[in-house]
Image (cartoon, rainbow, N blue to C red):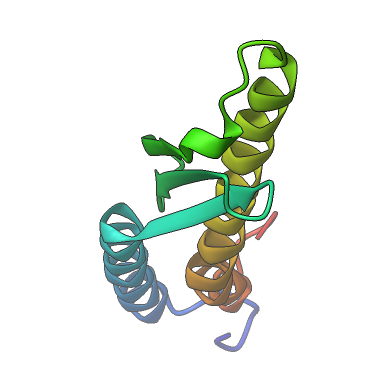
Length: 110
């Protein structure tokens, strides 16, 4: 900060622009990423994008039992949840350092 408590606006703008570029790069990486979640020892596999969009579900034929559809449904939900959790963790890893830099701008609430 400058004498008198006024922040250097030009420096703050440069930092904000740099962070905007870092955020855009992290978002692009997330959009390209594919994460996989499994359930039932690999009987069901779900693939999601880094942004959490469901891309694919694979079901091993051994998991298909016409007399026990509920178990297969549970496995699908578990695999999707597992993949979504992996996407959330990746998002935190990619965006965390960028969001952590918001405090350096001297902006309230960041």
